[in-house]
Length: 205
Image 1 (spheres, rainbow, N blue to C red):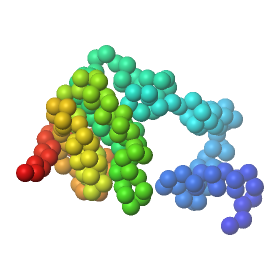
Image 2 (cartoon, one colour):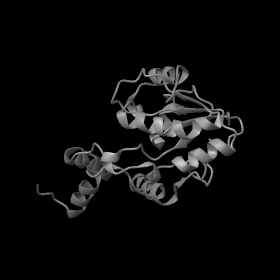
Image 3 (cartoon, rainbow, N blue to C red):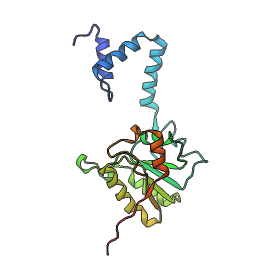
Image 4 (cartoon, rainbow, N blue to C red):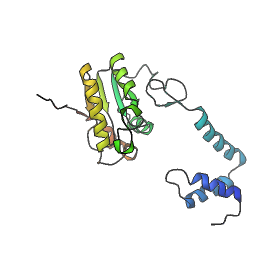
């Protein structure tokens, strides 16, 4: 498709590289930005640049943060004895939106997926085990999307931390199989968190 401007074409190319944005949507966004004042367009551009340059990852839980330690980890009113393990930052945002959890988080950065070449060493699992030992954690809650990979990851970690006497649970499966947490409504997600279930590991004689 021919565009009247190489600048518009470049903007469409970059915008259409975003998740869920096709070229038609990218064109509408580019034209919308073009109609804004220079101040608004500049503010948008600066926000995007700052997002990439200035965002940090919490040294404790690996959630996104403006500083070395995120505002959740530094909040003294949070329950330090309960740790919710999630796949990604978007899951922390989803769970915080329910206003049903007052504990701490640990972001793994993914789940174990051998088909994709992702093993335990590629995830923040060792630091999770270390936190469980050192921070007096009494319960670890797995809040993964319902999938085989999520179940595998939960089972793997549970085997590593249950010897420390930690209670291990998983959010209740009110969430349909295959649905990401970010697309689950807040009521269902909140109830799943409150009605979490204990994970029992098999015993071998």
